[in-house]
Every structure is written in structure tokens, then in C-alpha cells.
Length: 78
Image (cartoon, rainbow, N blue to C red; front, top):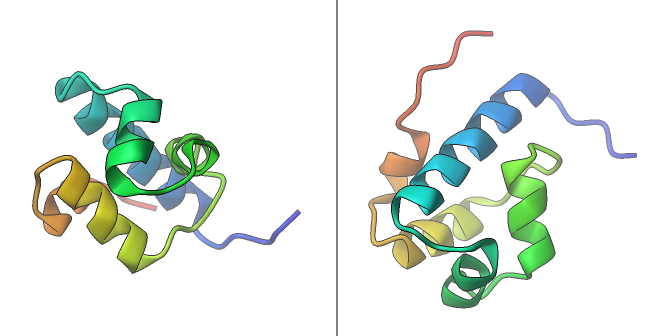
């Protein structure tokens, strides 16, 4: 298993991504297709299992028709 710093932040990010995806009424499969990333990666991001790249954040925001900063629009305190 990969050692991930700030696991709580990754989980919060993933939860927020899931919320935004559901607000757009998209399945993980559809988001993966639109963002051109593997569907398994969407699930792992939403579960906070991986620290995704900034380029993937950009792809996800484009697929969701949002600004990249919108994906970070959640409160977090460690």
C-alpha cells in the first residue's frame, strides 16, 4: 500500500467530487468517459484512496463543466 499524507483531505476531496458528480446527474462511468480517465480511478479518487494529479483535476473539472477551483470548494480542517 502506498503511504499517503493527509488522508483526511483526500477523503474530503473525494466526497466533494462525488457530490458534484451527482449534482450533475453523472455516473462514475460517464464522468470517466468525459474526463478520459479510467473508471477505476474515479472510484479511487472518490474514496480518497489516491492522490490524483493536478492534470486529472483539470480533466475532471472540464468534464463536469466547472472551474478547477470548484473541485476544491469545500471546508477542511485537519
